[in-house]
Image (tube, rainbow, N blue to C red; front, side, top):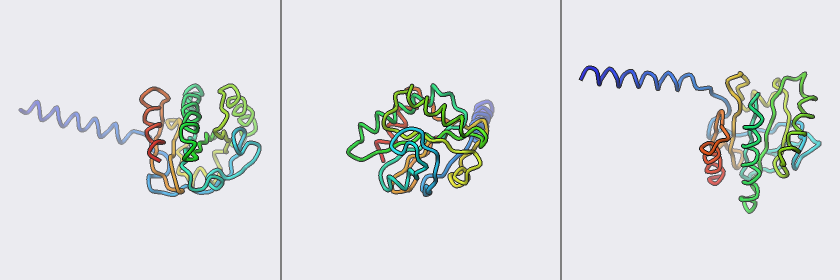
Length: 184
């Protein structure tokens, strides 16, 4: 009995430690997204600094903020968003990927992000670049530490409905993303 109790306490302790060490990032469910003006390099607002949530207002939307994630992973997430824009066209679903980068690398990231959009075959989703020191990073509570590779905000009517941190573009991760979008 003592061994079972000890094992249960040890397992609970490990689970609590793992949860405590999981990175946190982004607005909480129920919080409001706010206007911001990234440099758009592809998609509906290309070659502008238009405000994505302002432009698409109350429509269901997803923003994926990227902080040094593997671009193959970002491409998988992006393709799922492309498909979702077609699937949920009747709901006017919109999606944007925001590449967050140091201020001194914004111009080179614009070139890289534009090429990434072209080679990935993105036609509908917005691809944008934002400096790490932009006020929006703080407003969206985006964690720029190296252990946070991406943060996904799913929202409608300016209100966050779901959030994912370090989304992996594998079968399970994309299923979770697609289910989230379906629920918007």
